[in-house]
Length: 366
Image 1 (spheres, helix red, strand yellow):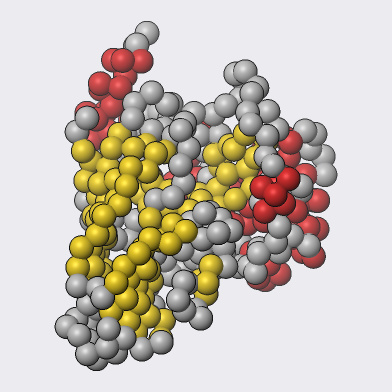
Image 2 (spheres, one colour):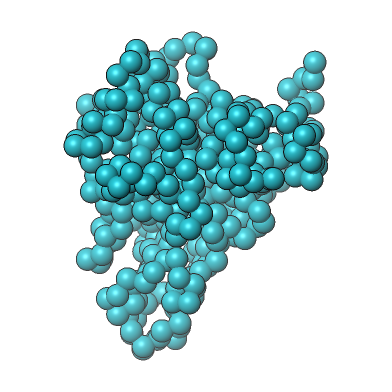
């Protein structure tokens, strides 16, 4: 039997080789995130504003989820020609962001933000000792409440009751919702960015397609409607998968388009548990050779682990919803992309022709 130390030492070579294996050989590749090895990453976000004639503001999400078991932010720094810049923390969700201001008539605005994090894999907590801190009343209320795009009544509540009607304890209900999304939703590659997270519209239209901010938001809404505290976790893939899954990692050091939303559900005795049905559907659609059936080995392996575990090649920005950008009248449903306002107009963060930014990731050797 291969020891854990031998396994960790060999994962880099395995991951690189697995991407080139035929599908039959890929059946032998396992997806098995386990805590044990911390990794350090430096993330650089560079924003360039072309219009120098108008006053502008920029907001850059910063890693603000701190969990000793899997992610530790280690600080942020910035440079550029902003007239002022400050780190602001949202009082409701604790989301941190850098707000930078550029004066009208100045040279084109440039700001570069560097963040450093440590992260490791999360393993499923089931089967071990059940000991976890309880949620406070205010925390429980926060992660059970509806948001503008995630109602917990009406069709959401009706759907949740149908899914969990035959389930038993909290774990069974949480798993039933996960399995329902995996089996009934699909990843729609035509959706811009990571989607919008408008879960009521998904259910009312019957179109259960989307991307991570749609499918995992649907999980969170259904869980909350079932009485299970849950939250979206908005973040960014920062490295390739160690397990050879091309669809579950960043393809290069340029991670400008590698945003990814995950989810967590709070289960009594286990604490916050990792959940990512959206990535199961991503594996089905995109993992070579693509369009994999639900019973394909690469899908089965991912589905088994992504209820309870996830790989540490990803950073978490925040869990915020319906965030009014500080110093502005504009609101965003979630903060996973850099945002900018020029002359009072909010730019489209998914349109590089009007809003230019790049995000790069570099792993720092320990």
